[in-house]
View 1 (tube, rainbow, N blue to C red):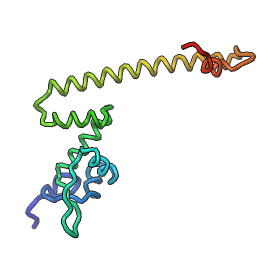
View 2: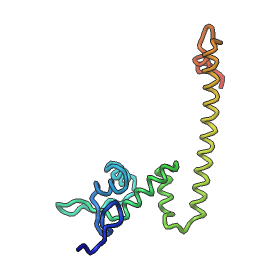
View 3: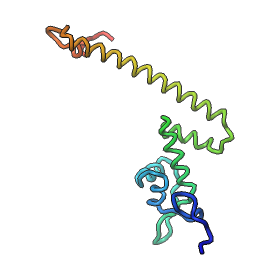
Length: 147
């Protein structure tokens, strides 16, 4: 009979340490992602025992998933470093301010993309209508000296 029940990260006993491959699988990323996060200082690299493999604590998988979820919300890795400093959950105001700033950037980007979409649609319509008898309206716009 096993002394530690099999619950935790995808069938890994709670007290079992993970190789980098098992960590990557448990976190849903590839091994190179783990190594990249280590180089960026987001994930600690455990020491390597003589003739053995590095072993990661179970908490490393949670940390990697935290990083990936933050990236999915649009946070850069530099911003994630700031979020990780607030990971204890006790700094809700600071975390909210970071999220509000990120939201403002995303909304600005959406406005910029909407403007670009409108401009491109107009140029495509002009081009399709044959309004540029001697030159393409898209090329003429890109080539113009006005801003």
